Image 1 (tube, rainbow over the protein chains, first blue to last red):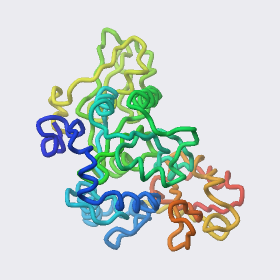
Image 2 (image 1 turned 60 degrees about the horizontal axis):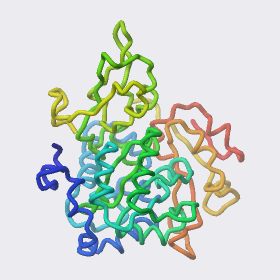
Image 3 (image 1 turned 120 degrees about the vertical axis):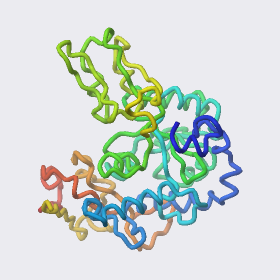
Length: 289
Length: 84
C-alpha cells in the first residue's frame, strides 16, 4: 500500500475511495474557477516560473549538486501538496498513480462522477502538437472542457456513458498506453489518462529527473516461465524497458525496479504468460512506489 | 559538466502570431525523438477569447535530453531552428 492509500484510502486504495470524486469537494475548494483558470492556459504551466526558478534550463539545474536537491524538494513539495489549492498557474497537488485495466474499470464503474467525457490529451498537444482524444475526465471537469475548444475531440459527441468510457479506456490500454489516475488538484480526482512516454508531462519528471511526480501501481508484472515462448512481443509494448529476454531458453524476465505495473504487457502476450501480482508480495520492491 | 545544448527558435519567423503558426506546422515537435519541445501560449498576448488563445510559440524546454540528431533543424520548413 502506497502513502496515498495509507493517508487517503480509508482502508483501501486511494483512487477507489469515491469520496475523492464527489462534486462537493470541487465546490468546497471552489475548483470550478480554479480549474477553468488552469486549463485556459494549461500549456503555460510547464514554462512558468516557480518560486523564481525558470523551468527552461531546469533540466540542467537539477543535475547540479545542492541546488539540484533543493529544486527536487521544491518540485515534490508542490506536487505532493495537500494544502487547499491556491495558485492555478502551478501544478499544485497534482500527483497520480499508474492503474492497470481492472482498477480503471472499477473506477469508471463505481467511483467516477457523472458526467464522464473524453478530451484531447494536453500532454500530447504540448509536446507533439497532435490532438488525440484519450483522456477521460469526470465531474466538474466536463463542464470546463466544454468551454475550451482545443480540448474537445473532433467527433460528434464527447460525453460518454460508463460503458463507453470503459470501452475507450480498454482500447487505449490494448494499444499499450499506460493508465494513470490523477489528483488534480488534491483532494479532487478528475483525470483518468492513457499516457505514453516521453510525451506525458507527469511521467517524464520521474523517468528523466527522478522527481516523484507519479507513483508506481499497486501491482507489478511477473512471468510464468513455463508458459512464455520467448517471442518478445511484450518487450516492444513496455514503455519502461522492464521486460528482457534472458537465459538459455530466452524467456522473458521482468526487471522489478523498472516495472510500473501498468499491465499493458499482458495484452501483447499471446500465450498469456504475463500477469500482475501485488507489489507487496515481492520483497525487493515492497513499499517502493 | 557536460556541454549544454542550446536550441534556439527564431520567433520572428515561427510563433507569436508571426509568419508560421506552430499549431499548424509542428513538424519539429513530431520529429523529435525525446520530445524536447513544448507548445504553449505566448505570455502577455492580448487575447480576444482567453478560452481559445490564438498566439502560440514552441519552447525547447528539455534541452538536456536533446540527442543532437538535428532532425528538427532539417525538417523545419523555414529554417528557424538552430542547435549548438
